[in-house]
Length: 156
Ligand SMILES: CC(C)(COP(=O)(O)OP(=O)(O)OC[C@H]1O[C@@H](n2cnc3c(N)ncnc32)[C@H](O)[C@@H]1OP(=O)(O)O)[C@@H](O)C(=O)NCCC(=O)NCCS
Image (cartoon, rainbow, N blue to C red):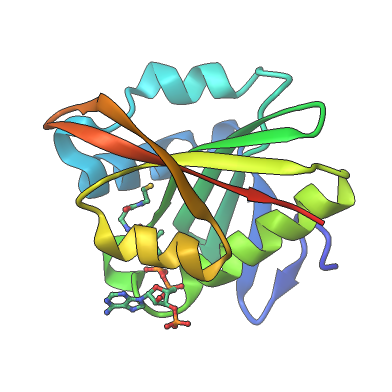
């Protein structure tokens, strides 16, 4: 496995840290608009001992990120996005695969997430990674109000 922090073909994966606060927050606002995490949510991730958060950069520019909490062997993905101009070019898949490799290395067994029921592309993306819808949570999202599908996958 490529080590976190290592650069490969101008792509690097690093743990989220203070130097990425502005670039990640700017992407978040641009991608999720009214439903974006607040800056203070990102700040609180900086010293959360249960967080496993990665930032993907290309040519030293932040183009994606994944935020999760990992408690013992149970991982919950709370945020995942790729910069708009870079979407549908395989970067999400690269970041997600790398993230799952880290979980396997850490002997994580379960992984779950919520996704807007209308987010067909993301649902399709997760299904390709073997996730299954397990239930629907009413009004899980607020801006705009919408149900989520909770999806999960067992890691082996
Ligand atoms: C969901 C997201 C993270 C996926 O990352 P991405 O870099 O765009 O995805 P990739 O290019 O790696 O594509 C992976 C898969 O997405 C799907 N995909 C790719 N291009 C697509 C397109 N034009 N239309 C629909 N689905 C497409 C395919 O299933 C593809 O797999 P394949 O190439 O084996 O067919 C990204 O699109 C994103 O940030 N979306 C907005 C934020 C969001 O919805 N986040 C998830 C919240 S739960």
